[in-house]
Length: 228
Image (tube, rainbow, N blue to C red; front, top):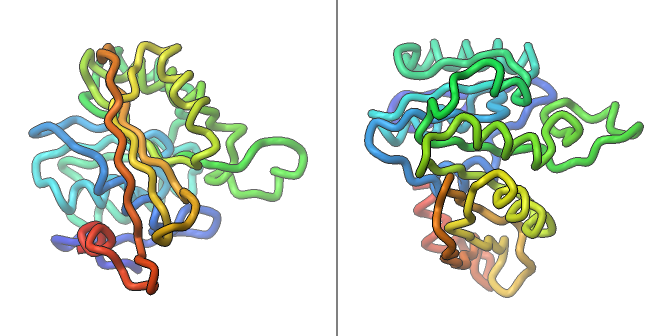
């Protein structure tokens, strides 16, 4: 069981995402407005919601998760962390968001989506890591439906998906506004990308780069800030 900030705790179940660098970086990257209503697309055991709630006492989180086991674990984590008044988990295929929620219900969306492709070999891969249930197109269609005009969508992904993600955002009326390139080690290849899209946003993309470790393998100031 992971101890997070301000009394929040996280316990995961087999086949779901553990507390990972991806989630830590994404929760740190997300900039929430005051008292934000946030939709987590593919919320798993509630990791991102717990991280956001532990740092922002005013946000309210709704997580949608396909796996019944992960959803049940999220409910347990929410209860143990005393967050039931402002964090709920719904067992739902994120592709059904447009038929479940009223349009423009949220100020922000967030997602740490699966990276693995679908196909016959993927049947041995846990649902939480399979892209056939959560394509970039699925993500952006649901986020565009759920977000208010001017709302932000934050996600983490692999660098080779950058062009596809920006294209999917544009096709759904969402403009890429911030891009962070994350290197595991100074001078090494890009390991992850963090992206922020704005529904109805004007063109203009701010780009920065961060390293988790320096050339001597020591944690950087950025790493320390993320993990506090």
